[in-house]
Image 1: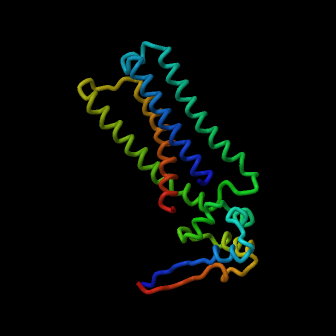
Image 2 (image 1 turned 45 degrees about the vertical axis):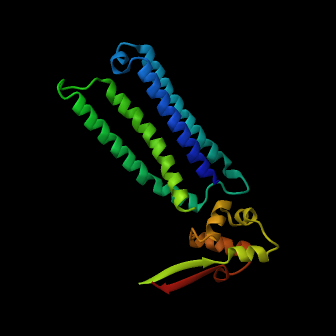
Image 3 (image 1 turned 30 degrees about the vertical axis):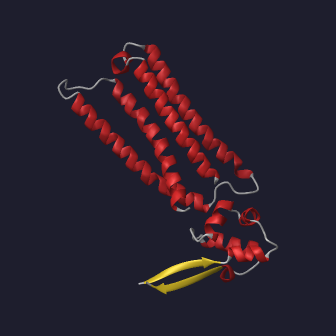
Length: 146
Length: 73
């Protein structure tokens, strides 16, 4: 397995764990209604979000640090595969935004406004979708070039 | 319209070079072992820079390693 492929796989695992952890905590603590009145819940969610981001960046850093090795860890083929991943990322982010927009509009149509928590949740979800879709895009690239 | 294929003799040339390993060739050419595997399987066409690096690592000319083939569909 190529180092970049390995990194993508770790990224995928981290992204899935990250998403599940945030969703589970959010639901367990009471969801949208509890968020505004519970600073502890907000702190946990932010900590989870930043923790996941740090874990993902740590993987990127580890890959870059290994560049001094005798065997290259990332070559032109890896760069070609990595260069194609943003197509998957773009579609994933676009679809996520479409889902958020349609869902929030339909759910809160009668109230005429959406709870203030949602811009935060959209931001968090887009970061996670970005990490997941980049990893998936890279893995698809390797699978197609297999 | 003719179909263009870039074939290579990397596997054969490695064998001729005292059974040079894929890892050794990758190290000499400055790429990963996975790229050598993909090249040998015909799944990847290298850039001109990598093609020259591989030819140089094997001690042969570019055309001894890579062949440009046009076939009618």
